[in-house]
Length: 152
Image 1 (cartoon, one colour):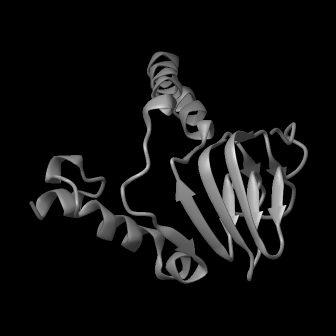
Image 2 (spheres, rainbow, N blue to C red; image 1 turned 120 degrees about the vertical axis):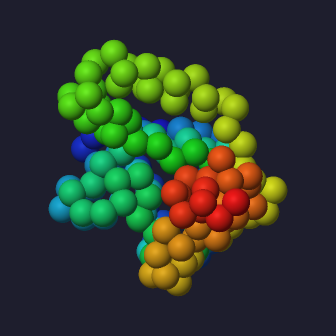
Image 3 (cartoon, helix red, strand yellow; image 1 turned 45 degrees about the vertical axis):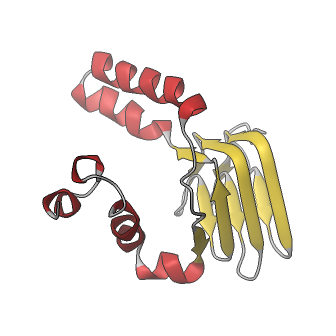
């Protein structure tokens, strides 16, 4: 599903919804949050086998803005914007290699065994705290944060 870089792709305003087996791309929220997907307060969305890729918003949450409850299973959220910026400032070759790697890895990315619900409370507590808590289940050399790698 594409927003053709002119509109949000999905706007979940109430109730419980599920999206499966699709790519959400090209969404743009002009002057708002959530270019690919927006989940309103009180709404619930489950994504299963979904790639949310290359969306943008003038506000926050280019890929997803969640004010409700969001459950991800076998889902990838990636913004190529980072790789385009990297190309500009670090060189075309490395940026192109990183973009190719990301695109090649999508079919092999798998959800972790326990489902994480991304609630508004979790987002308010800080995504960094959620990442740090989740990464402690991995070997130190695989952890994203420097402090997590030091904890061994």
